[in-house]
Image (cartoon, rainbow, N blue to C red; front, side):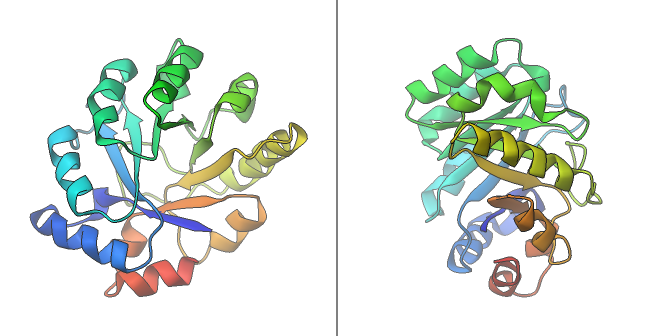
Length: 212
């Protein structure tokens, strides 16, 4: 299991220290939630702040776009050379074209599904994706309660991936903790995003280790 702490839950007053602590604590990726106030009712951070994160990070960035104008935001964040850029299928009319654009920058493309969106929505895109991110809360805010139905959804998605002989990763974001991590692993999840569980723990290293 790979762990991607969400910096949405970090203390932005000491963001450089927070980034160093999760990297030293054994995280695998740094999850960056980008919200535009349109697709979701919240505003977060832009490329100026994320470029500062990238300078101190020793682990790759996992950028999650929760926006309406996906192409515009991909072009903004691509120069930071993240490992992944993910976008919501619900906000994109031309997903295949956008996947190819992300690939053209040498970045791994991923698609995000909201809790109500079935995995069949992306069945014919799986061959082009490096990862699928399943939301286990409604996007927009941290600290929400885990939606258990994502476990069965992950299991179904894993079956679709295995049937095609693909290596597409499955990531889950929202309300992940030490109580549901085993169920997620057993359902075929490869990466989990953890915000409050990591950043509300006195020891980020202990929190990450407990999930691993």
